[in-house]
Image 1 (cartoon, helix red, strand yellow):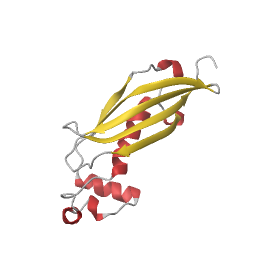
Image 2: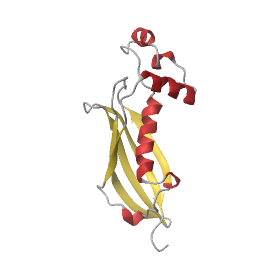
Image 3: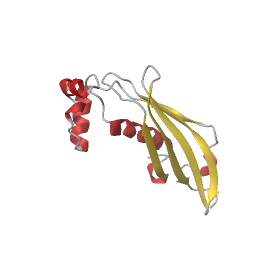
Length: 144
């Protein structure tokens, strides 16, 4: 169980603790296909990726978004997360090691709630950005 966090616990510019995932492999993509229902063969058959022009298998974008969500909710409990929005920047391939990082970009009190906004970035082992996003959390204010 996560420790209680408050609006006052965060500062603008504060970095999100980075989350690094193990290298993506094809069995993981097949398991994700089963969990998500996305059985597009582009995600597990090299020949389909070759025909599609991607050079082979590519990871599900939503898998990488899941990594971003995991990074944020390791820092800010899920019950406070109000919005997570991402934009996919580049494809992810088997063998890529994805690290999600981010920071707090804004804090404000609105209608009695402590709103914290932040940004997230998922990049591979070479620093190639795969996903950029933002989040909003509504946190309790101490003493409220």
